[in-house]
Amino acid sequence: MACNACDYRIHPPQLICPNCLSRDVAPRAASGRGTIYSFTINRQQWLPDLEVPYALAIVELDDQPGVRITAQLRCEDFSQIAIGKSVAVGFEPREDIFMPTFTLV
Ligand SMILES: [Zn+2]
Image (cartoon, rainbow, N blue to C red; front, side, top):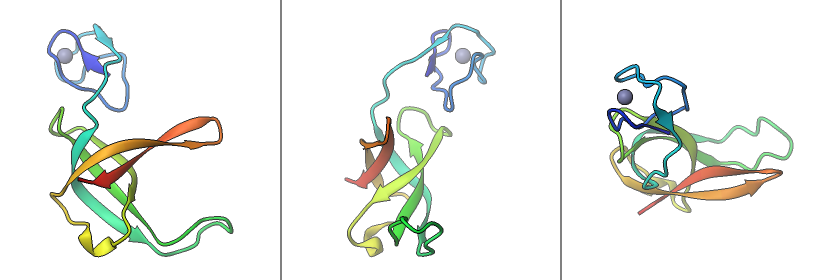
């Protein structure tokens, strides 16, 4: 989502721009690129069908500093994950929706 008045990127979607308070906001495609702001490796199997371990990252979007998305980070070698590394988004089908996941670039 983005503000048409000041070009600020908004996530999660809101009806009013948090930067300039304009109501002229609308969906807009993002670059899909970002930087790892923080991450964790989950090794606890919270649910019987949950595959562990997996990495969960907070990614700051390149399109808008300060706008962050939390999503799974797909990576074979967790030692390669570090704060500040560049990532790209992909989307994986889960039941009737597509979930964003990131990979290192
Ligand atoms: Zn705005």
